[in-house]
Image 1 (spheres, rainbow, N blue to C red):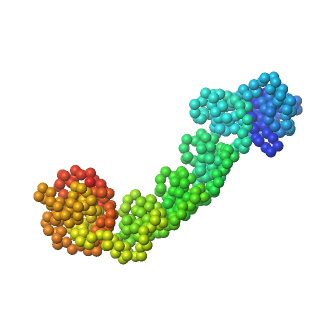
Image 2: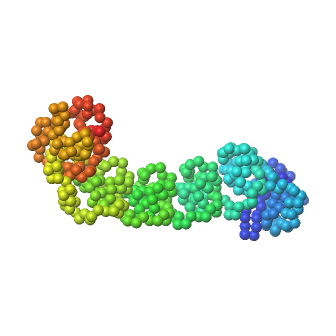
Image 3: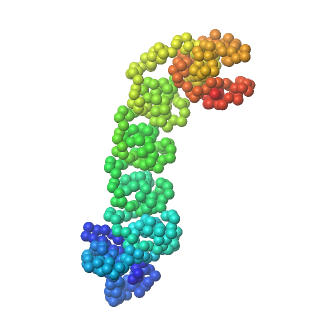
Length: 462
């Protein structure tokens, strides 16, 4: 190989620049990385020219540089090789595309970077060495099939050192390439990066996507992925992908890459905030704002329906078509009153007073929801009063009906509000048909039922 262990090709506007690296095991051309004599330098340059002409008979080679380690020993201006040489090479039948050289793997090497340096492809190197994966071992010797393919346009590679806040997505976007290309170029099996890590960036391998400019956002109190995405005209999934996030949890002070412009801004996605007050539930807040319970939960990363007084919620107003304008709490209550039979509200409120007057509003709604679920079930009577006073095998289903407490109960406004919400479909129990206080019941039948949830002192079951 004329004393050259490897070479690198750089495409310039004037033609190809070939960089030849002296075999470090051969010392006749260098003494302490310098040439011993003009005769040796002349001989080395002659061999360099012969090497380039033989390996690249048809390329427009403009310059040849000879390197010993990181030191430039000589630079030759060749101009374009004569076309007759290419014809001569073809006429003699030389298999110029079957030349090979060897390369010893060092730290930081990847199949992609080795292929780029030697003007070949990853697949060609893998085929030449019977490799079944892209993994390399330091000290491993590879056969490099040079001249297998023509040099693709715009395949220059650069290196990049990872800094805080970097993601594969943001790096790829800034360099007009893709996450998959960077992973392939660096043999990465995941999207996780380390600060200070050096990456090979295959810039120019693909056309940069349009409208993929990114901005950064520092998380502040109250931020959620949903609210950030909405403000920036992107999606929760887009932000998670751009920041390698596996969950929706954010930390105050965290810096996010926001892929703004990645997709059209959805219409009617403005948000408002609401501070929770006594009596609020997700259902009532959603109804007043023309959205859904699921929409609010998603916008605030909530895993349950429980709320805290004073809690600030992001309300995704306009996510769904809002019902007729709701003017006030009074109007809301009035509209619900039209739908729900007053007598049913009162009986259900009596039951809630009897069984759950010491519970939270959610716990009271849950007790009411069990009664409503029984009304809607084919296993029980089909109205509130009959469900409350139902007997089974001569026994009342509910103790307050048996001991008369249901008849004398005096519910307050909160009990009635809980009853109205339960009758309107609000159900924190997820469809339960039974409830009991585990500290007060010895019924093996109730305890054998499948538990749906526990709210306050009551267990709810199917």
